[in-house]
Image (cartoon, rainbow, N blue to C red):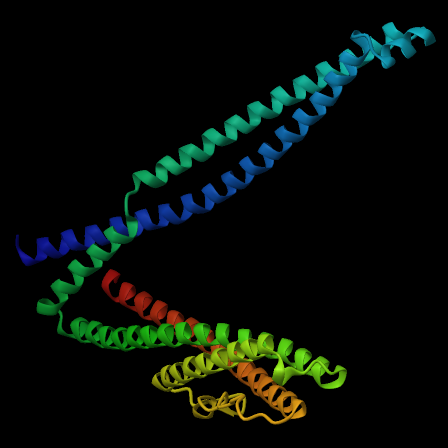
Length: 317
């Protein structure tokens, strides 16, 4: 195939890819509308069926041996009441049938749109392959276009790497957040234990059960401390060194708190309170860091989208 004819085929493939992408967008929007309509009609059918069931019960009550029939007979209105209830039941039955017909038609419309969508195939893959073919052609036939595409590729590579590091930092932050929140909760309980024992004579330092609880709290604090250290290192990879006035490096020493060699209940309570304050501070710092990482992730996604649109425009043009 000659270069002009090859380019013509590539351009035709790009045009086809653009066309089916537009169709896919339009059909997806239409399918969403049709599905919402189906849900509305499903709800209407359900409500009308409930109403029909109630009307049928009223008719049964007048037709069968029941207090309702006895009372209507005594009043001399049973025939009129029965005719009225039957008419209301028949009207409710007609309403159900009509609503079901509308609902079924809406289901068919939605299924038709879905079938059209399925018939388009993998439009993103078709579009990607068409763009890749044009890009390959440009590498040997259009130096200026090739240079622009290479620049976009370099920027995308850097952004993809940044996205990976951001995701890793976010995962480490979520792990740290879980442990820190648990520490805050445990320390809150521990303070209530120590307050009770200090002022009501519970004897914290002689109660083995409370020793076990304090050991649990200490272990949790140290595990949170390790997780914060991991998070700090991941934050450094994405260029975040300070968050909300709290030095991230300093957070690795936030929970250097031990509960041994305690000589008084008041000392225990003081240390618990101090650990609780540090846990709260760390928890706030982690939340702020996670919010910043979420923003960074959104920014990267936006920049990648802009680069993809620029590449698409260059190749499609």
